[in-house]
Length: 405
Image 1 (cartoon, one colour):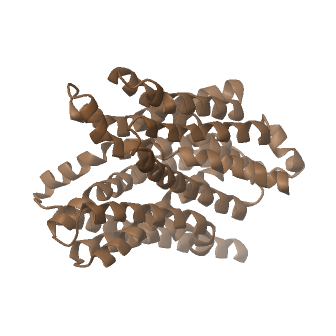
Image 2: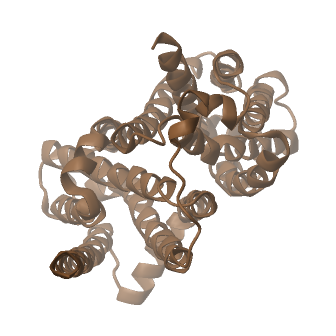
Image 3: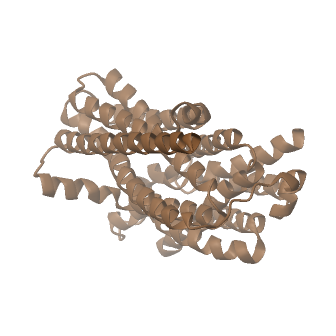
């Protein structure tokens, strides 16, 4: 039992690094000052460029896994994150090298991003309830890592901007934990229950599964762009409404993270309760509370809304990953890859979502933009509830017919 816990927490510790790319955002003003000849927009890319290379890492990891296995691929990713992460702390006088190190950082995260979910699925393939709970915990650890490393960067920033990059040294103990406590291949990981392994045949259902993967990937892309844009626009919103200051806006972003963290830990119970209604119910909650922020005149209420918005969004990602891990190996791999690629493209393009909506709907205020986004999310939620309801009725009808015959 103790060994199982060590395996579990070694895997979950890797998730602490997944959302750590933007942790150095507070460094941007100091780096801009350090390199006055560099366009400030290019300096700002230091926080977002890892997302693009995460996509490359996810795609490369699929191939690398076939050659050397999951564990070695994750270890290579951790080595890349460690060295590229702390590089700016050691060599910080050439911007091109600084930029390149952030690219390799994203590549490293991409190598293990998907594989953590796959290894969790391997560990709990015969216990769907436990698997859903642990995938939710993985999501929580992502949020926890983002929050803790951001706070630590803030403290190290008091010394110097480049010293703060030492936060990524956390990749070293994570590497050691994974190296010592996780078996090298899938057979070792599953040897305790190999005889009971449930095999799902690769059948004509794959066509339907491909459509599901594409549909959910596109849905996630849309949701991510709107959610990340909310993170960007919440501070301008409270300034526009004159109900708070930039510090309040920063606190709200922290509460979004807190909501996401809570969502991961209770996902197992939420999934058991809502099942296929998880996504539409989460979107309904997201849309309603996003709308409330546009009419709120209270910092307390807006902060509470932000926490619920973080909770709602982070209930969606674990559901998608858990859904795909229940499919055939091929669909599981394709699904998790497609979801992670859609997520990172959405996160990268999210700043442009506001510009597109503003142009299409002729809105000229932050409040109007968030209002439009909330209505769009609510429409998707209502459509989703209808689809799940019809699907459920159809399944019940088919079950009744089968029993009758």
